[in-house]
Length: 337
Ligand code: TRP
Image (cartoon, rainbow, N blue to C red):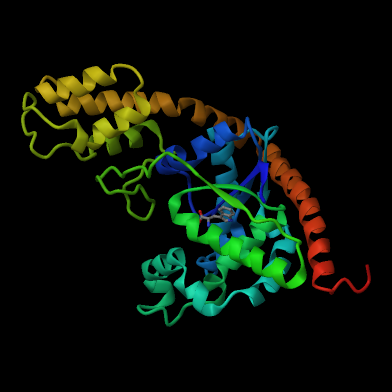
């Protein structure tokens, strides 16, 4: 069974973090780091599976992601931040685990299926250009997870099929080579998916409906002014339904005071959208201020960031070496130990 005191999660370095990441995942990790031994992987190897033709993007975003995570409040004294490619044992485990998974099973994985269909320009209309690496990334993710010895994995529901795949690999490994690996358990974050400025169910970089943590005040204001409101409200004093309004939706995330007033005034037609948006922009800017300040500190001390990543990677490498020894012994390939 998983070690109940340790959590591991991962994130691909492919762009800056936005409010969806913050309220959907990272904000939760900030709390969890106080209660659990926390490991956060910057999954650059996984990012390369669908960005193999754009290594500059992945490289740049490793540091950007570290900056964003530290800015959000990931505390290097409490959590271990590490870079996936710095742990070659993960790649080594991937090779051995790949014998324990059928191609058909990977093709059936719902997360993979969805992603392949979203990446037609890379993998073709019918997946005819699908790479071995991308199809196999759940195996590599199983290696991420087991390298650290089986932990709780805080993830959103879209990741559940990947955790299940890991559990299957662990069971298969143990049944063939003897009890060696621990099964991880997932830990569903209760916070729902954060909606986009356009009312889309999901905020996403590629959807063009996101507010990024690095957006400057002017950009935030501009984006908020363009957020979708109740389309039946035309005049300032029209009564509206705050439940279909993105402005009210974000007020609920960042405006702790006056929420009832905002809601009631909107319903009663006593609140104009423009003012309501201005208020939201101000609150959002204030909400993000401490995040921006921490980011500035780390940007000005970038060697500290590099040191955090280097040290974290070293810690995880030690753990992964221990796992690797056990795995090789179990598989009878520990010839010269
Ligand atoms: N697949 C995850 C995502 O796209 C990232 C990830 C990589 C991960 N390794 C992990 C998540 C290990 C949890 C555990 O968001």
